[in-house]
Image (tube, rainbow, N blue to C red; front, side):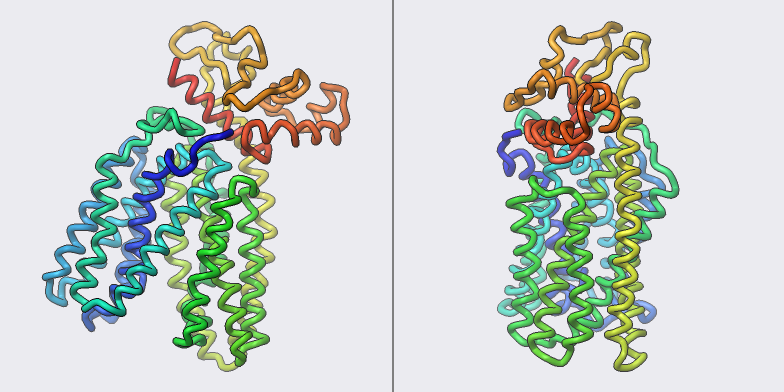
Length: 495
């Protein structure tokens, strides 16, 4: 699958990276907030805490109450307008207005992100999500680093005024944001009128949220345990940005060749090593530097994984607001809980570093236990999604591939040549045997049954699959089926 990567997704990347850069620079303990915020709190709670509390609560409310996915752009526009307006008002507002501003922007920015989750989930194919999200997070960190530099050279009020520019730029881009305009350049066309039925259950939400809670509690640990130990040494300040962005840049370059769960296993392993290094090598510059590099690299992988897996799940189950809402609520709460637990561990004495390392080890065990189940569940649910996207008339029961549609015609539109149904993109050239294998794959058969039907060994089948998947621009079976689902939707829309 050959296509210009940056152009089709440039709007999608920019509108999110600009908002995320503002979040990192301002309300999330950013440099703009640090030099501008008045010495003011509400009932003892800090301004960042107020923002995060309402941010998290809004994600939860969105997951429960927002159902109309076709309102995604309205949500984004409303969120962008309110967030930008409140930031501008802060230039002239008294100190007493700041807590209210933090609460309102916490709500409006969450609404913006929930709206963005729909075009991200539906537009970007599975094998491109790693690259898209790495570009988004790189862009956000560039905005953050730029604002951090400006905080050293500009007066506070001027910095506050300049830092609103990413919001203004995001709003202007959003006015013209329409993935449909670029559908001819997309690997998978954007189809806002198609809505899949949800097959998710309570267990899936529970497992996903518990997993995210376990991982991001240690992000809170990072803020109160590792980073305060580093101080303001230039070596540590430098190592805070470079590993994180370097990892994201490498994934941006090679993300289309990586498996979707690669970033999880790599990130969780690096996270464990970072706390082991911190526990054993604490007190030496080399040990602290190693811990810093490992933990920042770990969260580059883990941040990326969470956004990719959420987009993947939202595509499969067709409920992006619910999936993103519950997961992002859990993430925000987990960071706050992690900060609290980390502070408690520090108060226990010198052994707090070892306790933190043991807790990380427990989470690593949990992740490696849960992920096979989650992966199996998603693959199992692919076939119901295929069936839900197919009409149920008598003629349709004969159709076994998602390249056929009877929408609006009442008759089978099956083409005469089987191989033509599978030539979704011009680079594909399937052999007769590969065509047979693909047809059976689309019927939802496991590898063992496919091998039996074709009278070949499973090893021979695996060899064929290794040759088939690159022709569709994917590396795994679930990615291939995801591509087929999207193509089914595009054929139905066109006919």
